[in-house]
Length: 262
Image 1 (cartoon, rainbow, N blue to C red):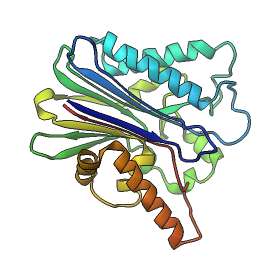
Image 2: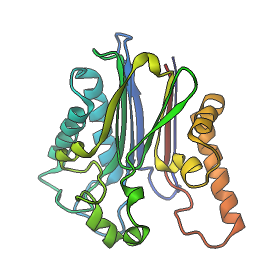
Image 3: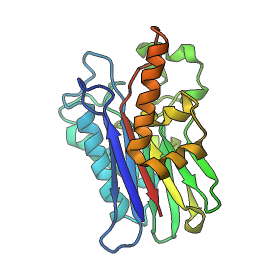
Image 4: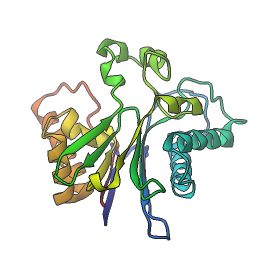
């Protein structure tokens, strides 16, 4: 088994709000990976005294522990429990009903459990890639936000009206009920040769810059590693800035990648 993990902040002036980790139980059977992309709120009060990095670390750590200690629980249940436990930690000190309360996108994968399947869960716009033994790559996506008209997302105020609301898009925040909106499923273990989880700061190599397909993206990970893909993203971002003085997107975003060959 080969596992690589890398993460890079979008700016040295801001903390990295992505979170990624892998658990390999002492039994040597199976494992799990978690990747979270913290949602950066606009400047100002958003009802929480802790901040997004605190939230992603709390939620991520709980998800990882539950993923390998509760193998009989489906990943949707694991996520619901982790959201509830994280909310309970700061429920008495923070306004968890605030639309901008700390939240994150989620990618989870687990293999080697009782079913011997590779289980997956994706919530919001991070990506999970599954590679078959023949080399085909399937992208597991929650594309709700991509199906929304761009004009509805141009301001924080309009995006807030769609956040965790029917007809909009969903993230892991304080409501465990959000798990019903996750893209979840399972694949027979023998049909997965490798998998990779990417936050949108890394997946933009495919989705924004169209430097290659998902299959080619996984090929980069196999050849150059997780940091190699992030380095490629940073190079393309810099080249785009040099070509134009008008950038209509965040130049550098936090990026996190986990690559696992099973």
